[in-house]
Image (cartoon, rainbow, N blue to C red; front, side, top):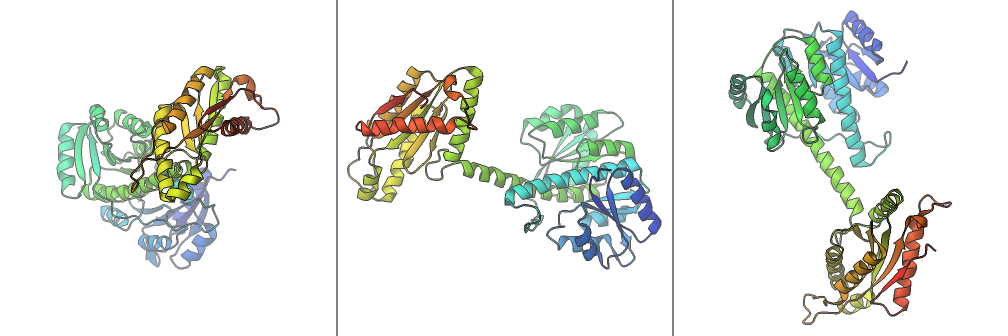
Length: 466
């Protein structure tokens, strides 16, 4: 049997624990049982659950106590906690949400709803774990960082998506007194209006007996713009089957038995706070990825990017049968510039060189700084004569206009040498190497050396693969 995750069931009543264990084990989850708050910390450390189902009231505490114990442990802080309360006890439901629990299940409940809620929470946790692990670049089991606290969210945009305009107006009026977030109201057929402006941070969707509401959920979750938007489904009754379908289609929470403004306000606050934290992690990941591929001084791509891009260009050339060019360009006598004018002036020359190279290549291919004053240019789908013209343009863009330096009355002349390797599909035989890219770069480097040896400030072309 393949175990899908470990679930800790906490309840002082043994029959309740046994019933949940039977339901969850049948769905291939590993179930661990407990009955008290006492000794819970040791049990949690030993079992490392992926989710906790706890009775609202325990013999020596409550679900809120369970939350406090887990929140104090960085490794367990992101484990979802679901309280189990009497089905019609709205006060207990609101209290559990106020205490920061992830959800509340009304007892008795159907297997379909229980398992859908478990699947949804575990799926969300895996997504958060992947974000945290990537952002911190640490392996599981080697000093995982503490889970970032859920900070109070900024003003968010919330869209209400209802079956009728009247329901939307009523919901908006009720919710406006309970939340500081901005509200807009739309009807289900008018999904275009929701997607045409700024992407909402959260969408509250009215789910009726018809399939349109659940179809909208799947549509929203599949779109790039709303993939990470908080989705909350509102059901008019205790329809466990519809609630389970909504959870499996991607809603973050389901509110049953109509629009309870207090419950929805609590869920929105928690879910938007979580989304804010996750969005920051995603932004950090994007920034980290960008920084790992960008030269911080010039803003050009760096050597890591250049190698990957060149490898991709080579593979595309094999598929299309079209040639391409690799160029290595090196500023002439750059050390003399640093020695005479200082390293700050040298940096200005490098940044201006980067600007001119970008302009000269006209966004064709890529330009990367791969060393101190050395640059690589990759031009896909380029014929020999075209590559030669482009290399001449690159050379002229540097030498024809002197460089202006602050605090210096006169501009200084700068020249550049360019080595070009013209590549055709026959050059791309892999031989005993994983990729011919290094061989092609060595060939371009030999061409650059020939340009330097011939007097600098010129282009030298190498057509052979050796």
